[in-house]
Image (tube, rainbow, N blue to C red; front, side, top):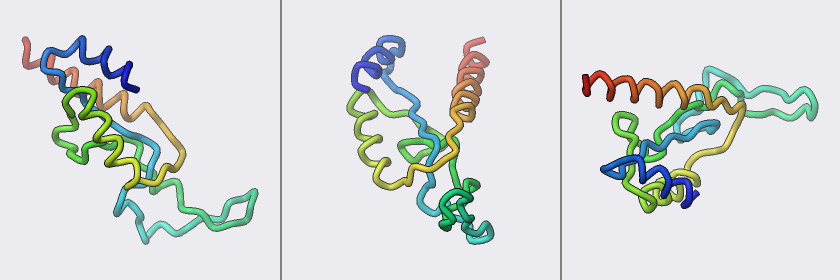
Length: 111
């Protein structure tokens, strides 16, 4: 992860990197209106897939998901990972859409 972030930093003059996670149940993300579901294979009760967040800011700030440099990325990862429960399904398309929206806003400002 460190090597990837170092490469990303080279393309960003302020070294700020938008950091998103996907495929997890966030704290408070459980909806009592959507009940547990029975797994067809194991017959065990499981959390419903509807509770899964497909795009969330790893720093907890939806309005400004950026962190600064390698230390910011590693810090956000270390802080957030224990707080969320990895869960499926995992769809990265929501993250790609969010990043695309941010890039379009940046382009509009520059024109």
